[in-house]
Length: 210
Image (tube, rainbow, N blue to C red):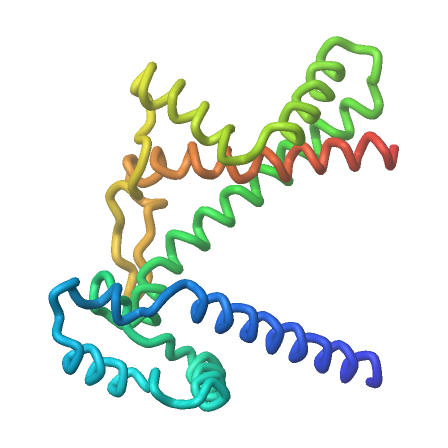
């Protein structure tokens, strides 16, 4: 019981620290009013916008309001599209979770098998190929792997899309790309890019354990 309470307090402390860092970062990123209006906006209109956003309040008041809204999952309006940030996040949660699930299944499904095989048959050519693949996957940055895959399979071969989610099917409030061919094709490159690094870590871990 004490361990659970300690873990809970630690989690609250971590979330508070993250909120403080995010709030401080946003303050040093520049005046948000300058991002919302043009260069020729009169000072009076700028001052009115600052008052409406509460930017004239003391820093502690702004931070308290920021934490209170974050706890309620209220993140204000997006300056670019003019919609609530919570709405934009909700629209993108299905794509994010589907991509994470595909990358995880790919990493676990292939990584465990390849790692166990490479550990049990270390001297075979296939095992050495798996070991070389794991070293390459760990060494190369994920963004570079993504660019290379896009160049090969999208630009050069034209087999897979380089961006987008493809066609989706609404299932209530959820929209899925699993039920369309273009949606599945759009998942391949990002899932491989995200799952390759985790897969190589699993291979390396299997080599160390067995």
